[in-house]
Image 1: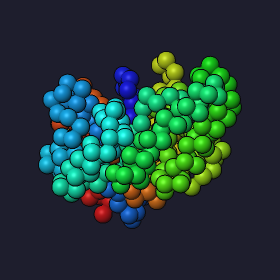
Image 2: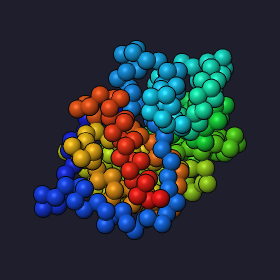
Image 3: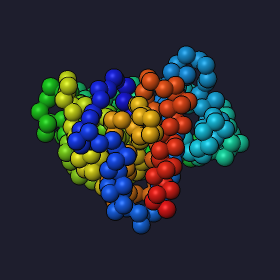
Image 4: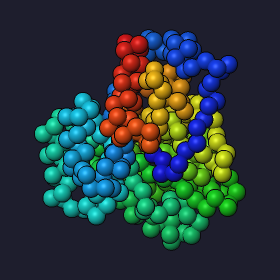
Length: 305
């Protein structure tokens, strides 16, 4: 999930051809792979939620009634004070059960940096996530999504060491309740696919994994890590996938990411889990953006069946 403005990445354009002109060859190699499933990330409706047009419980219902999606990914920002409110969590669980919706994970933000160079702050950040892990377990989720931030002024290896320390502590807690802790490429060095894949190797625990996001590869001012390379590096550890979308052309293709090429990478790693829609654009309404992303993913599903 990304919380900053993105610039267009036109690296997938070739000789003036549109995505649809060359998408099939990319995708044909995974035609015999098991298909994926589609979920909805709550951030896709962040403007509706922040403006109070809908509330957090509405999101669960809308996933099914408006978009025909039966699995959701929560964002802790929209029920930040409710992590330990068992009555509220029961309402969430009932709303999901009543609508036939599966709760997959909670995306956790604003709880401190797991790679903080200050030891006490790093430990506090780890402990701040415990309540979200327990809430996720209660809701039936398989994971919490966390951030592996450190101090960007520190060297690559030092940030890796610090993030591995904090993430290892958190993963050990999650392991005790049979829950995963998964890291998204979400700013700083975590948006560097090489660094984040090395973090996975360093922690080396079956309960740790990645949540590759198609778009979150900004590693500095006007500096981008190649998104296709990055997703390829993160997929061996993926326990969820985020289909970031911003804008669509008249043919229904996402203009920043070649979804056919990207899903080819995802599926060629043997992934058959949920791919979460995360619309973050401004040129379409949030509802339209979700529908457009869903339509494109379902088209890919059909071609893969």
